[in-house]
Image (cartoon, rainbow, N blue to C red; front, top):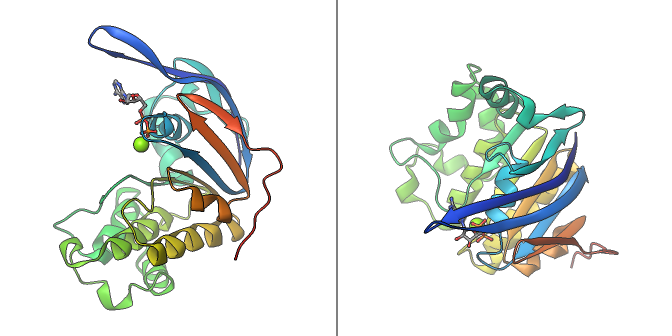
Length: 226
Ligand code: ADP
Ligand code: MG
C-alpha cells in the first residue's frame, strides 16, 4: 500500500502562542522500512500520528493509495485504521490487567475477529511462547516491545507505525526489535518507525531526518547490515 502525504503541517498552541511542530512536508512511502530520525521535540510523534490517521494536519492531505484518509468520516477512518494499520505506541503500552496473549488478541477482539491461531503463530515467531500467560509487569523491556509488535501485527495490517520502538532498550534488544520490523517489511508490510536512535538507519530502506519540524529525506541512503 502506497502512502502519499502532501504539504502536511501541524501547528500547536501553548500558553496562547502557536508554533509549528511540523513544517509543510511531503513524504511518499511505498513499502519497505522507513526510519525517521530526529531529536526529542523535533516533531516525530506529531508527524507519525498524522501519517497514521490519528491526528488531522492543519494543511495538506494523507493518501493511502487513492483514499484520502482525513476526508473519511470518523467511523470510516477508524474502520480503515483497524483493517490496514498497526500502531506501536511509545513506551510501555500493554494493558497491565491482561496477559501477553490477551494483549496481543485485543485489537482482533475490537475488530470482532478472534485470531487465536494467528496469535499463537505470532507468539512463537516473536519468542514469547513461555510468556503468553504472563502479565506485563513480569516482562523485561525487550519482551514488552516484542508483545507490542505482535499486537500491532494481529489484524494483518498493510502498514505498521512504531514510535520510538527501542526507547530504553539495550543494544541486543534494539537489534532484535529493528530486526523484527525489518522482517515485517521484507514480508511485504510497509513499516514506518520514528526514533532518536541513529543505529536504526542500518536497517532502513529509506531514511528521513526531522529537525525542528523540518523533514528531509536522506538521499542515496543504502542499507548496510552488519
Ligand atoms: P518528538 O516526538 O520528536 O519528541 P513531538 O511531535 O512529540 O516531538 O512534539 C513536537 C513539539 O510539539 C514539541 O515541542 C512538543 O512539546 C510539542 N507538542 C506535542 N504535542 C503537543 C500538543 N498536543 N499541544 C501542544 N504542543 C505539543
Ligand atoms: Mg515522540
